[in-house]
Length: 473
Figure (cartoon, rainbow, N blue to C red):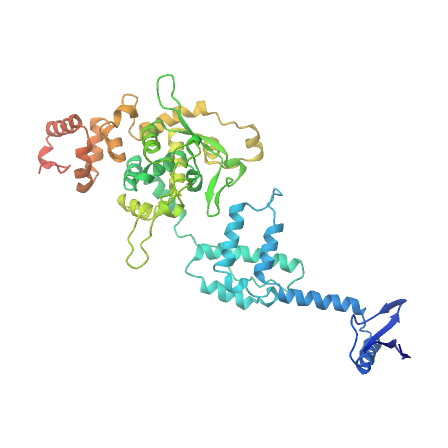
């Protein structure tokens, strides 16, 4: 092995290749590889000397590590980094991301973010993100959620010095324009009546009629209701034989399947107004899957799995040749095309307050977290809530003199059940507010004695000739 001394370092032969090395500050430095020619080895030593002369020298090993890191950063895609980010992401409580949250993030990466997700992290520019933002303007709400996710991922990449700046700088991206005002929402909820809810339920496919009633009178989130099983419904009666049913919420359905509830506070027991006992029992007999773990609202495709939210809401009718179905069609039956399934939860709270429930009771029934002090000392006592539940049933037409068992025996439809339980004067006023089509459909479902009573009362008031109910023909 031959060796020749130079101004900086030495070059040695190792078989048919050449090795260069030198010492500086008491440490030996090498290029990390050998050379095929002696000239190339000497050239490397001269380049090292040049760096020293320019005061630009750093240890070659450090430069190699930086180059490898830069290459790795260039090869690291947004998709790969985002998944690592999800693995390490924790909630403010220190727990990992919920399964349904991770599923939603993964759906972003394989969906509307796919073109960006496949690119190297370092290649994404502000112009790229701005262009993506404009290209997804037709889904403003979804775009807002995806952008927030992307901005968080890129902020972490910036903090780890993987990128020089965060490309997510779309102006006003953090704010959303509500599709309806708070005033319009409050007005919608306040105007909704128990008869409207009954009509809405009646217009649903039979397998989902009880679901609408449950959502409206329990305040459950749609995902919580769809995750219910038979054993989550508890049956009972009071001392005077008034139905005392409760529903236990311990899980929720999301796009990732049945999993934990939204928050720990969402785990709760909710009392149900007594007039729900009959429609719920009918649903258990006809539609719920058998067995205590059987889904209360099973899928049309597989009775062992819960129905999806899409099966309940139905078609929006926006596709060519498609018609409205499910909840989207049912809300037209009460002339409320702007009504959302989640609005039934808001209406439940409104109804509770009207019946006398306190703000704290409503918040607990909804599964909301109370303030630190209030939450520590407030206890929800179901026994104090039953009078309020009875009042809600009375507002829906049920009275102690007409318990659900007798009030609905001759009425097959949900709206007809409500009408059959009203007193005569209230029944007349309600029917007068219906359109002729609804009257023709509902009158045959009422018990004949009730129909005769209504006609006689109208005649005594001198109004039979006007036929406000459309019954004279």
